Image 1 (cartoon, helix red, strand yellow):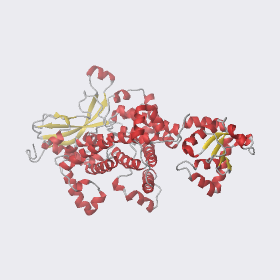
Image 2: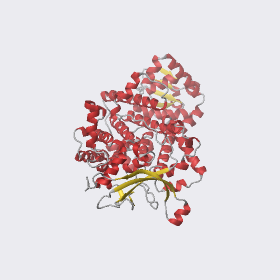
Image 3: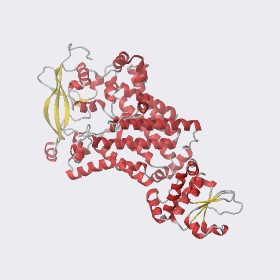
Image 4: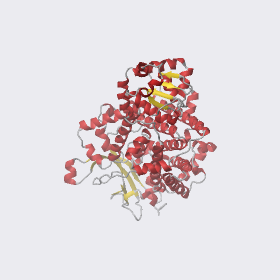
Length: 612
């Protein structure tokens, strides 16, 4: 706050120094406008303005321009804000739209008569030392953590890529390329955009997978971050298409869209932050809507968690303990999940402190999911997205001061050029419109959008810049597991066990976050149907019969390590968590009962064909 004198060449805002509400927002505006406006309480300068009574000073703020012109109330507010970067539009609206001016003055008067109430509300919603939000620390931290998420995703795929899409894998990429060429012709380059059109060899798969990991490390280190993000996006998009059945998960799409928005964040911070908030809101809200709109009774009667911990794809160690909790606690957890995803989610667009409540709620939900289930990088990615709901002032409280000072010295960015701002605005508008269209198509199918609007969604759809989300819509109430067995004589059968999915009933769960064993995951989905619905499973059995080491490496226990068996079969079991009594007396983690044969006894036409 400053003193004013006759030679003052800056505008002055005069407020009631005894009013907590007035002082609160004068302090905030002072930080917004910097040195371009002087702020003084009327108690210090009332004698300089004999034509304005004390009652008038107490009734409304006064804006004194350098030429001596005096404005008050809402007009004074907008004149003051016009000196803050990016806030001049409010004054233009006030001057050019009479209804807006009238509503503004009425609103000002309404608040002025209830200033103690609104002062308490300001403290509640924005905090005691509220300052104009900045996001330099947030964006710096987001990009580094986001780079680590991408690193985990690339490495996870790389270590199993040969089993998945290698030349001797379950779904060879080279065969997929030939199939797309015959089906799509020249349209394949746009319909299925990927770098593997240049080369689909095993070496190319390794280069893209490990190359993506390398550029992710560069992003973490802050080396060529924009170039790194572009290459990371292109490489992961390529793996998304090349991975076929093994890359059909919502978190892969979420990772890609977040990568696209991360690039916008690097070009223009505030638009990037708002788009990341919009993505977080869409994802969380869709997660709740699919549960309700699917008609799944276990969500509606709050019994979903009675089944979830036991039937999820890859339980974590705490899942067994969560499953044994009293039904009342599990019902509360189900209700809390729906409350967070359907009610709390709207706080994303509320003032600062309420937005923080949304962020903490989302983070708590993701931590609980991550502690009880293995969802690769999904929960970590969602937590990183929640960073966009905070601001630098909040982050500073959680970081050592030395680190904050270092980031301020090294993390400053030049203001983007106007052409960049315009381009970002166009891309952001397209992104929001496309996401609204996709949201409409998923949840409001009975109404139709104009063809022009639908074209917005379809225009860049192959690039996966905007995703459609909604996990856990249907609750699986029984756990089914496919158990593969091999035999050389057709009589004595030995069981294959996987590294991560349930098999041996004595084998407990463990955490493998952020890795996703994609064959293990696909086997969980395959168990919900039959082998005819999952042709990839038949190809998987063929590779096992051939003894392809790339594929058999996914097994924890291969009962035929030297030479593949002559026969394979697959049985379908129902698995349940063992009761506390059985765990204590029999040392088992699961119990299981045979349901039926999933795939009949099979063998290769030529017993030696393709074997190593």
